[in-house]
Length: 305
Image (cartoon, rainbow, N blue to C red; front, top):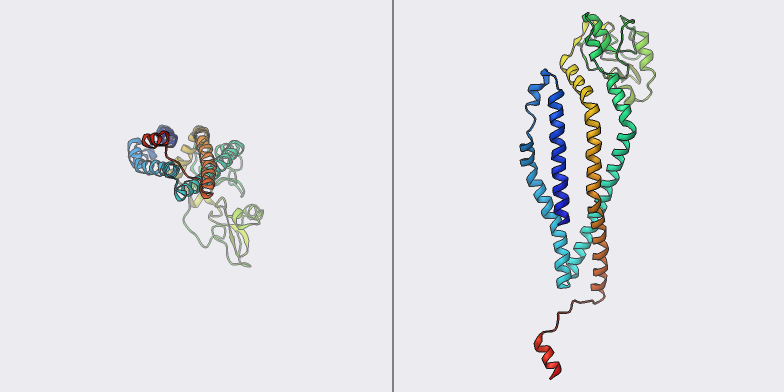
């Protein structure tokens, strides 16, 4: 009964949280993304798709106690050993799941405010309020380079280079560097910014630099993006939606993980107790312990005769 209740409660709580999150996404998404959001599955479709998986999980979880029950009833050490081993594996997996949930919750609680601050810092909406197209492009190109309009607000240098569409130009050394020793990017500010990264993973993290020819160099953005690049409205709409949803979905994700953690605790305790009980019974069966049937009425009459 506990296994069925735990699976069903976890299933329906998760479905309710997913439905609520999808509703938030549909409410906050811009019109340009509404058509794509129409392809998301409905709650009923998710329910129908997940039902077989939940049914199989419940069936498998019921086989373990059934094995222990008949092993104890018939005195079968093999069935009891199977019950004991499955309970041990289940308890180990449950403990690992709890550790994972605690780790994710700790990361969200410690890094959640920083993630929200990072998302807000990369909000492209402040660039789209500018009237001049060149100013918009310069703002979206961000800092960490020589800016054409230094008096306006720009995105941070740590924002992803994803809001501009720039056609490839291999003659521009700021778009793609020449081999080592050849002509390099003429923007000293960009070169100095990329040289601050020593490891390839950090160098390519934001899409502004590339680790080529043994060092981190500017890539992907021309020397003057205001004359060669255009605004990627689709990516801006996606980022704007993320900015709107982050303060709502991050706490909801944390709440769902807390519920998952609390719901999983009884299962962990039950699995550990099942293993201890199963091992105790298996030890007794291995030493010759056997289940004795109650005496029949005929046997009792013969003893008193």
